[in-house]
Amino acid sequence: MSSVNDALENARFTYEQHMRTCRQCHADAAPCAVAKHLLRIHNLARRDRMRTGGPDASTT
Image 1 (cartoon, helix red, strand yellow):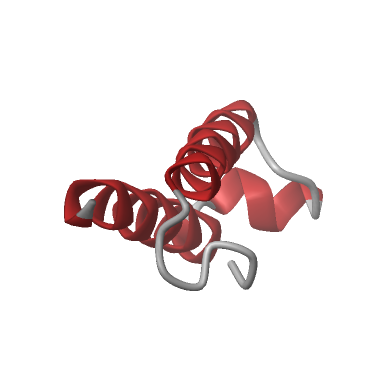
Image 2 (cartoon, helix red, strand yellow; image 1 turned 30 degrees about the horizontal axis):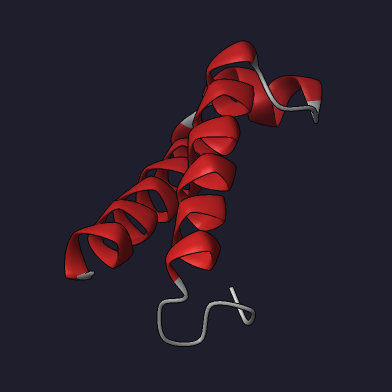
């Protein structure tokens, strides 16, 4: 179960880091294609966590 949580935290961290450092996201004030892809990965990891019924599954 910790691997599901690790995947979610890793996806969240990667997305947030990209949003802080991407010049295109800041210049356009809209997410770039990479940000959209990373957000999709985060959402899939969050969905997997909810399916497994991990701790605090509904709060993330």
